[in-house]
Picture 1 (cartoon, rainbow, N blue to C red):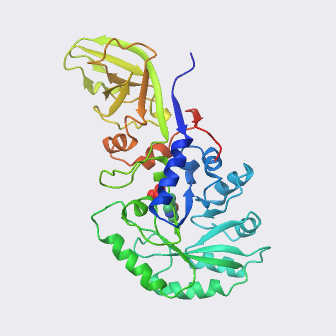
Picture 2 (picture 1 turned 120 degrees about the vertical axis):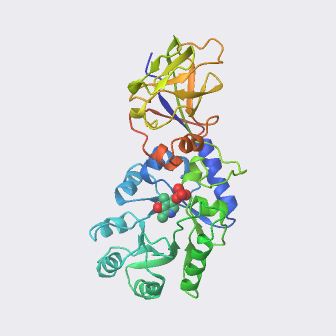
Picture 3 (picture 1 turned 30 degrees about the vertical axis):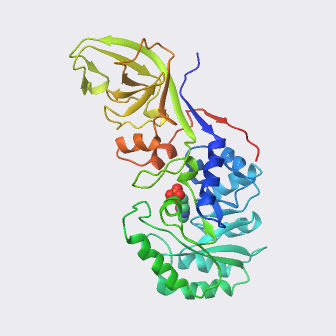
Length: 360
Ligand SMILES: *Cc1c(COP(=O)(O)O)cnc(C)c1O
């Protein structure tokens, strides 16, 4: 038997979520964000599955864009942080990539470059997150300099929210006001919303930038009734079932000690497969269609479960670590992190299996 650890990726669910994002922003075009290997789902497979309908793809760097181009993905691709050095601009122009400009250095690289073709530039404003982007007071001058450059084909006005996931927080509305005031009267389409913005702070911008919601997890701090469908199912199987007496330690460190006689299941899944090592006892897991809980410390290749209350569990029984039944967000919350981190750090060791029709 092959090792059963597996990440199944449902491409129909992916397309469903993309369409949901588009419906939440009627009339807007969408940059489907596929950076970081499509949040661990496989950038090429995800981009191919969305190629017929995505208005553009978003990546973090030119290497990620070139991977898509090499796979035959012809859609526009936006470099979300722009280029990291001037020498990348020629390649960006040749590959018809769109570039963010977020600082004076990038602006100078573009205006001083000799390019075979002009670029579409997304000019980023720091409206309050204070990570990257031009200050509102510097924005108009940057816009004018780019608008006057023969290397710039068109300009999109862009910003990014720091706290859009916090649905009761006033910071997003404040950032919006700053963005609108500082772009009033400027030519160019606007783009502000990531997944959280699309779901909680709808706006009439020409563009949206959905990332996490495409993969089926809500970034919001409240339960959301909208029908996001989980795209990745991380699964494996029981490789051992054992009955322990009361008072026996389980796993490294002996941190979990059986409070009474217990049946323990061992699963072929560990932190070497991307399952978080800091998952505490009680983290939900599904075995043979029943929810149960993790016990004992997660090791590199194995983890242990409480099989109490399950009818005759057996070696080979399927285990869902996250997916349709155990939501990624639940596991992330139990581990004091966010769904983004869990899927993004999924290692290559776990085979990805793509399901769903791959056509449009
Ligand atoms: C990653 C990223 C996104 C997507 O964010 P989600 O929260 O995953 O929707 C949008 N815009 C920029 C600039 C990003 O870097």
